[in-house]
Structures are given as C-alpha cells and as structure tokens.
Length: 88
Ligand SMILES: [Zn+2]
Ligand SMILES: [Zn+2]
Image (cartoon, rainbow, N blue to C red; front, side, top):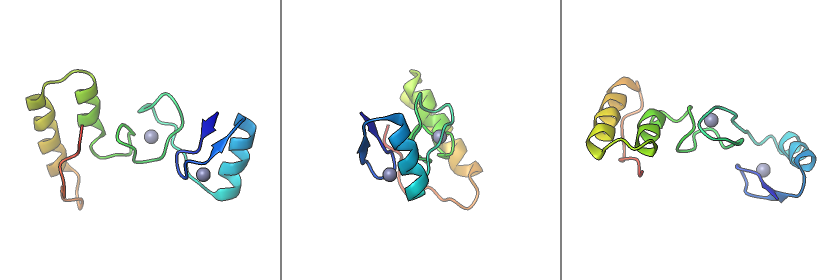
C-alpha cells in the first residue's frame, strides 16, 4: 500500500499513485533525506532549513552538537526567524 505524503490518501499500486499525484497536483520530493518520495519540507527533507541538524541528530550527534548546528542554521537561514525549536 502506498500513501500520498501530501494528503495521506492510499493507493494500491505505484501507477495509481502516479496518476493521483498528477491529477491532484500534490508535490513529492525525491531528495536524499528519505529513502522514499515525501512531502517537501518534511523533517529530514533537504528543503527543510533544519535538515542538517535533524540529520546530525539522527546520526547520533549529541544534544550539544545538534544545538550548535541549529544555532548556526538559525543565523544563516535568512528571512526565516526561528519561531520554535524543532522537535527531534
Ligand atoms: Zn495526495
Ligand atoms: Zn526532500
């Protein structure tokens, strides 16, 4: 069973999913953040500004290391002030 990452509806075949994506205009992202197509901006998606921190966290970095990366990203992501700490 395949699930559309955008609207969570399910399709039984890859072909049906492709048709749904096309018909609905739902966006999928195929970056390396996940091993499968996903919604752009998902926590581990590379289009998520916090992706490097989340990735470090997933790969076993300590809380301090992740915190350092988040601080760095918060400064470097222009025009996107940090509203809330991302949840790991
Ligand atoms: Zn959908
Ligand atoms: Zn992605």
